[in-house]
Image (cartoon, rainbow over all chains, first blue to last red; front, top):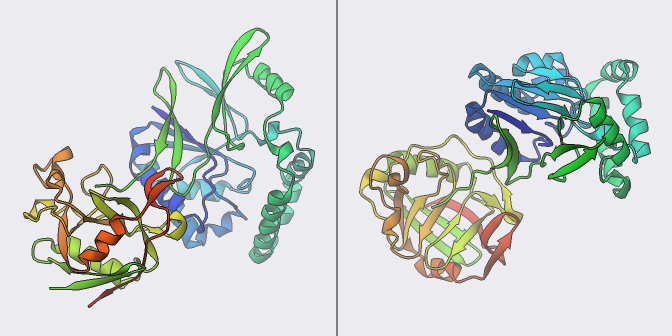
Length: 242
Length: 165
């Protein structure tokens, strides 16, 4: 069994989602052979030196504990945590994935992505993305003191909240078709848009499924489960009841 | 025996805790009281002829972080009768953390039956000794849906303060 999640946007300001994720790692996730985190695990990441922050250390330790228990964990960058690096990966016992990533299983093939690279209608965001994904920008940024990087991250978040939402809405259709063609018409799984849905595409006469992962909330998360035959959505919820 | 007073916006509820029958559960509850965890939390699930549940959410349904779960001591012979307080939990029998509920009617189906699966029941660890009228006021409030939650009071029922008395 393989699990896919994305867009948890974890931060100390989301104790509910954090608690859900920690319990998910200690429980449900351990029934799986592999866990794929397709971007935006964290609300922000200013560099791997921030791993000494107790909150980050706790998340890394919980990931590491699940990895030690036999779950192979893979992590892709999102638009919020693209500075996650090798040092974090080692601490958390996971491997970093390139975006996109072709996941070929004996029984089925998938292509995995965060999804932001295909939101081409948001030209301002794409310009920003191109700039911050260069090694030059990242080297320059990571050389700055932490408090400066924190301010920059806050500014980026503020700016992204204030940008027009309408154009941000979804993946560009033509670019998505090209993407599916390039990846051999396999099932596409991504996050980023926070609009959990399953879409049917017909590309060159071939039916291709696109599964959009749900984002996590304070009282509810969701994972996509591959059981070797089908994909299904499963709620991550720990309601206390009598 | 320890007593804990919950001061709510509907009045005060005084609970007598049974540390002899439920030592771990009472210690767990008192630790949360002493840490101030319950101050400014809400009764977020209210079902008139069943129970009122709280201790896990701040106003606006913000879920609070909890400590490690406590062992289920439901086999202690205490019953989920009207006015008793018991621990809420997930489907895992030993998963109670901070959330508790006060039974508003006799709920024998919540009592311990067997140490497996559904049979575990819900651990009673005390009872209301003063303010059952306040519990009755709370059970009667109007409820609705909020987000993924059902039976949430429309006007928040707030535990302003929880203290050992």
